[in-house]
Image (cartoon, rainbow, N blue to C red; front, side, top):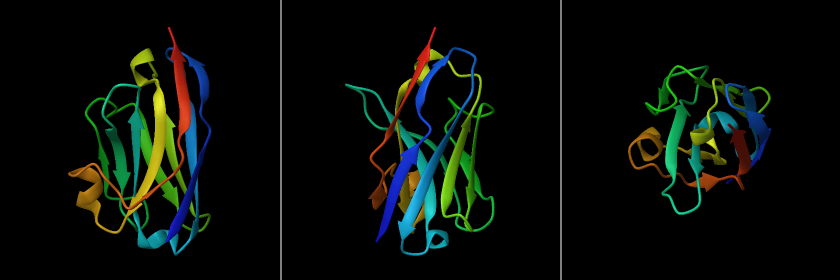
Length: 125
């Protein structure tokens, strides 16, 4: 089992940047593929980005964030990151990190075995 705790959310102006972190504890962090998802009230959970177990790849991104967001991980620090740039109000959501041993669970099924509690990102216009 792995426990995930997100941080770094907040209020930012349109065009600004924010970095989210997800601290993992429990079983070996490097055993898991990691992903970021987001959700707004009344909408389905949306896949944002994913990264493989080892090093900095492979990485996958939703079209809506490609070129603006960067996912990365530090296995020595058991931490997942999401660098978000050129933010716009449509990026406002609760952002969740997730872990799964199977990458396609994250990238295709848009699901995962383990989830954090979420961190709120609000982008003002």
